[in-house]
Every structure is written in C-alpha cells, then in structure tokens.
Figure 1 (cartoon, rainbow, N blue to C red):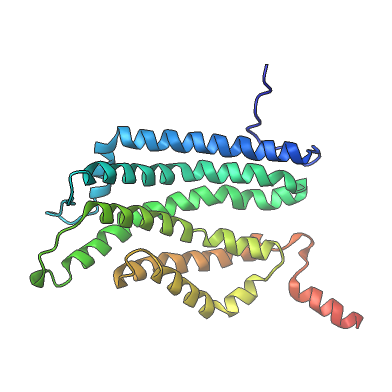
Figure 2 (tube, rainbow, N blue to C red):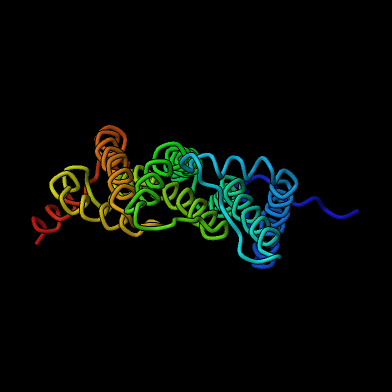
Length: 261
C-alpha cells in the first residue's frame, strides 16, 4: 500500500533527504494543482453566478459585449480560470507555508507563523475592499469620463481581466502589515526608522497604487488611502510586537561594534 502523502508541516527535528524534500515539494504542488483545477471547474460550473458577481460593480446600463462567435465561451473560461486562482490563493499560500516552515527552529517558527497566517486573511480583506469600494468607483469614473463624446461599450474579455487582476493586485498590496512586522521582528529595521522615513513609504505606496490595472486617479487614490492606513497601523503593531527576540535592535548592534572598536 502506498504511503500517504504528508499534508501537515514536518517537524524541525525531522531530518529529510533531498529526495524526500523533492517528494514533499511534488506532493504539495500536485495537491495545489488539483485544488486549483477543482476551483476552476467549480467556477465554470457556476458560471452564471460568477458572471453576475463580476458584473455587479458595473454602472447601471452596462453589459459586457463580445465581438466574435467563440468569444463568449473563451471569455467564460478565462473568467473561471482567474476566479479559480482567486479562490485558491489562500490554500496555495498555506501549501507554500507548510513546505518552508520545517526549515525554521521552533522559536523561529513561533516568530514567523503569525505573519504567514495573516497573509490569506489580509489577501481576502484586500480583494473584498477592491470589489466593494475600488471597482465601483473606478468604473463610474472610467466609463463616465467624456461619455457624451464617445459611444462607450465594454468588451467582456477585457473587463473581466481588469476585474480579477484588480482584486488580486489589491489583495497582494494589503500584505503591508506582514512585510512591516517581518522586517522589524527580524531585526532588519526598527519601527522608529520606518516612522522617520514614512515619506518614502508614501511614495512607494503611490507607485504601487499607480501600477494597479486601470491606473486611473480614482483607483489610485482609493487604493492609497487604506494602504497608508495599513502602514501606520503596522507601525503601531511593530512598536508592540515587532521587536526582535532578546530586544536586540539594529542600531544597538552598530553601537556595540563601534564601542568595541
């Protein structure tokens, strides 16, 4: 009888050969691939509901159009594929976490575990914010801009790509608290240093928001506001929970080396 594949993270003390590591990686990739295929197939099966959800942020009177006989089918397949990725991302992120976690000692694992568990939660929060706030406002602006001068139609394949990519992009941008807490907790920098250089953080946030699909002013501003709030909230958390173990700060290391010299 074949040995069942591992589904939970291995222990740090559990020594594994290179072949076992590769088998572990293959097992998790196969599991992730199967889950992704199931998610895509489920989205395609419920394609009517999926299309209704995707069309909800559109202003009244707008219905996506297609320009070729095969486009409705391929557009639906494309949307189902993107929807499956969106649904699967929390599971895919967990599989990645489960594979790399055994590389850390128990103390290090306690350090990194809260950050990794926050990734899917923040991603879902970002995607939800994009769906209910960013998308409706951005579409109202984009589709209403110079509407009297154009006969505005909306091609389905382009709209659904814009829709899903915006949700995914904002979901990833909501990982700011994880990044801030990680660099502070690992001793790379300090909350005080980040706070003193928050103007650079604002610039980075602006550039990241500018790179979102659509790149219109409304999408950029609506995305920047929560991202900057998340950054400031991250600084508050970092001051309380983001200190390196043992209280060793990067600055203190520099001071010790200078005094030793």
